[in-house]
Image (cartoon, rainbow, N blue to C red; front, side, top):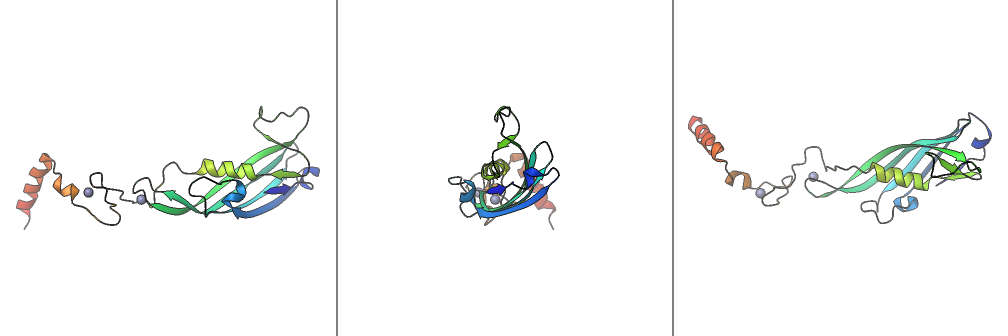
Length: 172
Ligand SMILES: [Zn+2]
Ligand SMILES: [Zn+2]
């Protein structure tokens, strides 16, 4: 994913848009689980601010597979990740690594690594197949989204037992 900056770098204030569509493989996500079928599109703009080139935009990843934290089933979801990065022309003074900006040389900026890192950072820590996922039963492992089990009924807290009797008596 290389952006041609030959025009943008010449003129302060100049903006140029770019867009890419590719697979996860195109941005170097090879072995990471869940990315095999993902479709990645990147839309953004290069802006010459005078001091540096700002590359900003949004990455949209579709069909990313996650494993639900609660029920352990696989599900697919989309991610939308905004990104922005400063690029300065490589000179004798710029020393990439010591600074919080990136460097470029020539007429192209390759954003493959930027896209890859942004996507990995955006992977949610907590994944849920759906907001109200019921998860697995702690006792028998049944997926409570699909079926129910009788574990909760057989494990009765003595305090609850009293309450149950009470409920039964008052039932019509
Ligand atoms: Zn779930
Ligand atoms: Zn159970």
